[in-house]
Length: 560
Image (cartoon, rainbow, N blue to C red; front, side):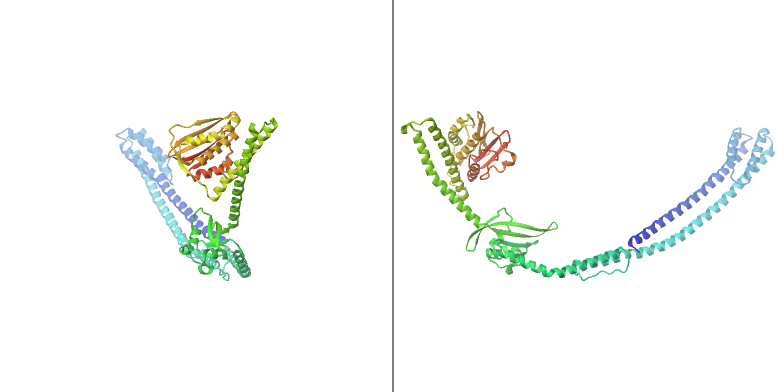
């Protein structure tokens, strides 16, 4: 029998038990209530009427109201005739009452009426006794049959209570035991159930699964071993260091490069708790630190090398089961970057001298002492002068950037008035502003505190802000320079009414070589990056606020 059928039989039986007991109980109670109602309604009320009439009969000679009361009770009795012979006695009582009303002194009528009332009482009393016996028999019969049915159902229910749980628990225990064995990779284990139901089908399915797992385990073991050795070979041939940990940070493996860097052999530390190894190994301690330092300088292969640290989480079904630390060798990139920086510094330095000579020659050509120039020659000289100024600016930015990249920013920190830095910067851009008819408005109080800064480099940053503001502002516009005290700092800001910067570019505006797409490329894209480095090297902060189509505000803060 199927499990569904067994459950249906068991639950169905309980339903039948409840239904049978409910129906029998309701029928028996209704029958007893009906018998009681009949006794109360049909017989007891008649006895009450008769007693009232006997009382009124005694008072007829002295109380005229007794006639009316007797008439009312007689009428009720006439409407409540239920027993055989009760009708004749009631009719006799009515006739006697009518004769009495005609002749109140007629004693024969009194006697006949009293006899009729006694006869009605006797009939109803006998009926009450008879109906009571009938109700007793009905109650006894109901109790008998309910007892029989209750006993039979109790025996059956007890049998089901004792045996039915085994129908469920026995196969479930067998299945649980079998599944536990299979979970422990005992794929030879089988589940045997001597029954034909859904549990048997489930056991057969689990046995089939175990058989397939056994086949898979045996057929793929050699292949898995081969793949493991191949992966180990590939890892060991890599130039990057690789160290693997399990979810408890026990060391699973490390390749040859990692062995050289750590100065440890894999077989010596395999399976050990990594923090324990870190107690005696500085590099392991640095690798396990959860910090933002991804680039490490490590002495390996008899030279200083640079490695980029990446931590990869290994997950299975959303649960982290380990991690891998990869140390990518970026030494060649450092060497190339250093060579690039040296090259740029050398070329920029070498270019400054001839460019300065060109500017000097241009000044001599523009002097009347060397002769007069015609209009076309003057225009050519102006064009050459603009190009030489642009080249000089680019070489200056490249030299500054080479200082930034090598970490050799030379600062001359002194206390100086902010207004001196402002005047220096305004003087440098005055001609450029006049050419576009741009008015520079200054908002700076007289009682500003001095700032601790490198005057030249800070002025360079402010000049860079002003140059950009002039370049991107329309003609006849106003640029506002504001200097104000903010907590323990002094803030320098430059606000323009130019095109503004789109929100998506604001986070990149201080990146090296970045220029907003769509703008005129008039430099190297290093000005703001160098400005950021100069301000941060002085312990300050630099920011930008911009709304596209409205304008931009560049500002930096320095300690006072």
